[in-house]
Length: 125
Image (cartoon, rainbow, N blue to C red; front, side, top):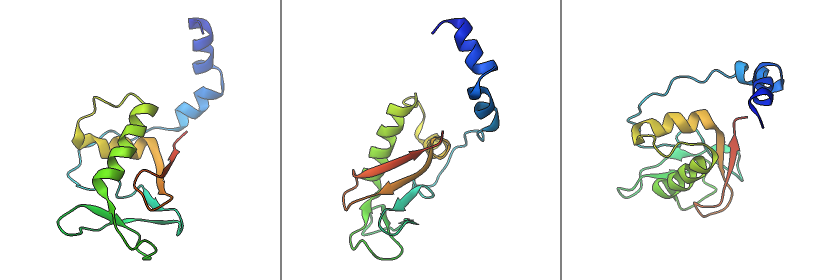
């Protein structure tokens, strides 16, 4: 793609309208220890999963009780951040800003099975 066709995509094509319509909020630092608080959803129940401290460990749990064992927050967040790094250039983002970045990139993260690495990512377009 040359500079002329690149300019045409931005200034006169469909990309222009979509890019102009999405005005992401500024990145903010977060002190919330749960990176996926508003993004993690239970696949079978289709409800948001909630932070659930369990034995001194950060975990997430389905509020409807379909999953008997809570998910390790560290494991689910690591898999999600790795997916975000593959999707966008975010590897240099400092940890306090990661929650804000993920909220800008993702609509939700769906836990499909009983393992923290079986996730489906629904990205903003």
